[in-house]
Each structure stands twice: as C-alpha cells, then as structure tokens.
Image (cartoon, rainbow, N blue to C red; front, top):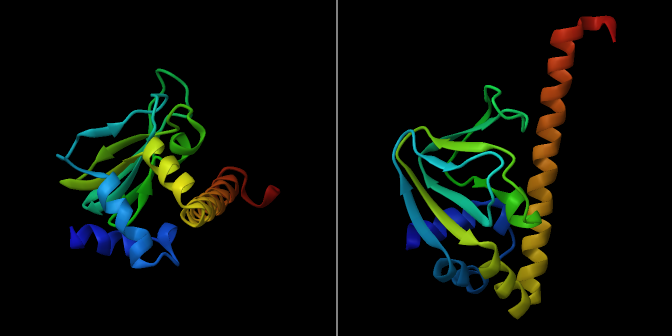
Length: 159
C-alpha cells in the first residue's frame, strides 16, 4: 500500500494533506488493473467514480458527445493523474472515453465514500474541493490553449 500512498502524495489534488489526512484514502479506495485496450469508462455513460493512475498510461478520447461520430484523442495520461472528476462531481454522464494504452493500475474511489469522508472531516472536504477546482482550472487552461492553436491552424492570421 505504500506505493499507493506515494502516488497519492505526489498528486496536486492532495497538496497540503498530512499523512493522517491521506490515510483514509487508502482504506476507502479500491485498486483495479486493466489490460491494454480495456475501457475504464465510456463517453456518455453514468459514472460516480474517480480514478488515480498508479502505473501505466491511458488515452482520453472524445467524440464531442455526438453518437456515431469517430472519437478524437484528447490527451494521454499517466502515473499520478486523475480521471473521471467531472462525473464524479456533478453526477452527470462521462464526457470522454478512457482506454488503457498499457497495463494500467488505478486506485478508484466512489463519490459516496469521498462525500462521507468530507462530511466527517470538513477540512478534508475543503481541501478536496479546492484540489478538484484547481485540477479543473488547469484542464480548462490547457483546453483554451488547444482551441487557440486549432483556430490559428484553421483560420491562420486572419483573426
């Protein structure tokens, strides 16, 4: 379990957490392993879990939530990265499909377990909320850059 704790400690989501605050995350999560090509979750499916990659690499693909459209790889993620935070937070459909590129080991938590832990310890709840907000902000910034670059490629210097 120490390797799980090491990866948790290295994730910005858990920045500022003491070892005592991190310990419950070891007990309320579950480790899952996926073979290359396995789907962790599909775009538009229901989801209430968040994933931390412990080892390996996965691709995040999106069709723009249009059925029967080919998916486009958005990003490749690896050790220490979080997946599934949008559905985890809003109880809505998944915004992308995630596929294991390599042998993939993850730690998975149910939203209900995190909410219960947050209610029992408001400081943990506050820090988790802040961490997820920072994660989402970083992803919006990265997406803004990708959109700007795509617009430059498509429209050139005309704009």
